[in-house]
Length: 235
Ligand SMILES: *Cc1c(COP(=O)(O)O)cnc(C)c1O
Image (cartoon, rainbow, N blue to C red; front, side):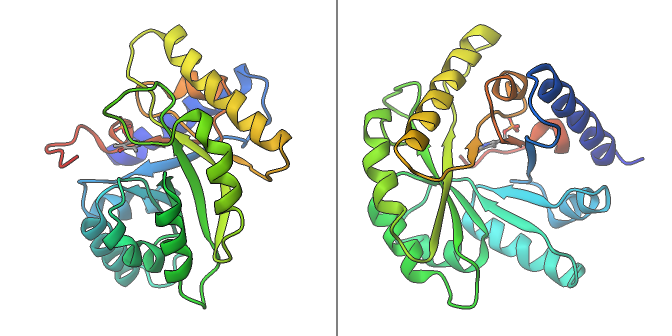
């Protein structure tokens, strides 16, 4: 078995175990394999091992990879998620090539993505990024502003608002990890109570996915635990 296949199996087992421990239904946490900085060959290896959803942070790299993978596997249905910062003049390729965007934090970006989503494609699935730890340097909308943004995004015709995403301040302590994820869960529940039809909480990465699943993550975004350490980081 290849290293990537082996790692995918281990991560999948950890997801199954944490989902069961949380007494959540089997299959309620999906794995997004974050392939940023790794080549199309690594994605093809993961596809061969049964993985179908991939996350990319850097637009040009992501679009090139999507094209290369499609050329290698023209009949394969895959799901591509954009999870990096979005510049407002770079929304068109995101709207044209991706199925999901996890990092919407401004109405202006959402409006552009909706306007630029090609007619033949299904609506673009959207998560709003929340600055849940209140870090000055972090992207994301403040928790108190999420409801207003969600209401606006929910009206845009070519978008499907699915939920919330966060990257909490890193901490080694599981209790601290869980506290931030719990605040996300509460925010998510409060939006649903307001009538927004959300089904996605995108939270948890290689180092904190267990805590995220215990607090209700429905998508964990896992890179290094699958593909190995990144040799460079453009972020
Ligand atoms: C890189 C990245 C991940 C994956 O991080 P790992 O620690 O490698 O699992 C998840 N989400 C976002 C937004 C990222 O940029």
